[in-house]
Length: 195
Image 1 (cartoon, one colour):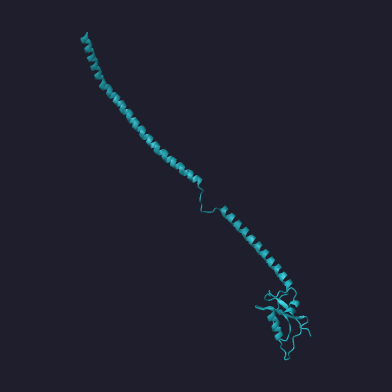
Image 2: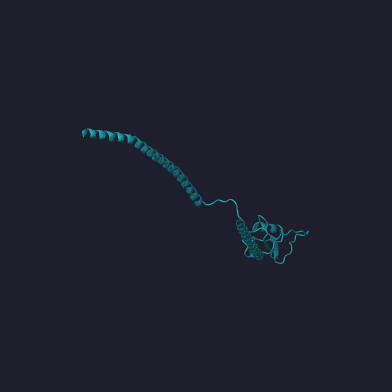
């Protein structure tokens, strides 16, 4: 019995050994198939990772574009209409300001005309007769102030024409006249000397 059992073990071993290479080859084929599929899956995952990275970059770029204000160098028709309207408003304000300024200048001219009559171009009286007589005047002589005139130089010029007048008399004849503020082309009265 011992012989049968050894023979049985040997036969089983041989049968197992004979079957093992066949099974090993089937297992090996399955392992190769699984390995191939695993490589395919790994390659597909790598491709998907690349696509995801590209998509993430596109999403980031789009988000940046959405958050960045658009710069447009061209003007639309509405923009031009608005600009034209604003220009018209500015021009209207300019015209209104001009009219206001002209009215104010006119008011100032009236005030100035009321304060001193319109200047006439007279100079110090000149004696044109052969006799040394002073020109006749009812209340005095009109004189138009010239550049660099002072009351003392005006009084001196009249005295040289034999019209004896002082600065005090000129101030008295022109109420409100300030000797330190003589304006060019202002008319003042030189009083007629007492007889």
